[in-house]
Image (cartoon, rainbow, N blue to C red; front, side):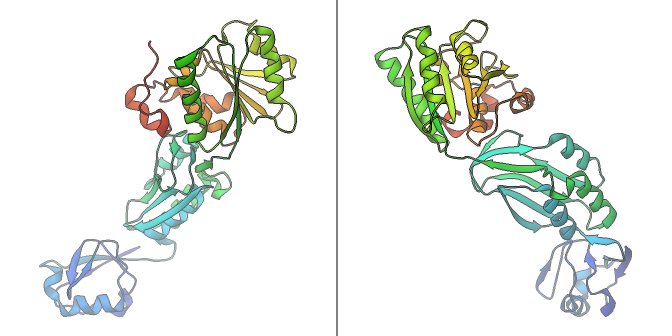
Length: 349
């Protein structure tokens, strides 16, 4: 990069075409923001309006071999950072925004994000990993601070981003899922209506279908209800349970999962409230267990786990391991929840 200065009264040479302005000014009635690549017309305007340059003139940056303009650098980095479910907006003053193209769950490879941000002067900033987002929502931005950057620096950032092979940022879209519920708990009249409405709000609010709620009168009935939902052509994609005892190894839900050839993959979620949740799978069917029906009318870590299951993500330790960062789910953290859960109360304790 070569630094030149255009002085008042001077006639900028045509060789400065494409050079980059380092401060805002107005010449010939045209506003020229910093970072602008000067055209021949801009140079003529500067020559005919010396007052625009002030007393000391203006510095411009001439790109040489290996130099990249800020906008091109940001676009190149954004191309490597962005994955599925995103559209780009910009650049504007070297900032490229990544916008959710679909409703879904935001995924951010935070370790790789940090490695990129160690590279001077690259900047990539995002919403929280695991956030539930709507189409049109800003989820990340890419920016380069100086007007001109070394091409090698941009390539270093792209390497950290995997050149788009493993995107830093993506939105997993909600996929219509069939969701069934099994309850091992005595619940009647108004409380049952409240529970059923709450479950429907959660499932249908994320674009899936509630195919039924089965109330198992005793432990023996739990296995049959689980088998019906987990088997056959009309099986559920996700089974929600209520009324189990996650700390009891002899809980009938655990037994049913095992009898059906499945497994429990996680007891407790690293978030509060969430330690009484559990995750399992029976073949391709995901199982999410809550301790009581009342928990479905509260905002808990289940409201961060369920959306991920409804994008088709497989239940397992990696699904929940990242929830610990930001896992104190106080009211101040409600922006991370789906819209249906943001006004719900949190359980006591």
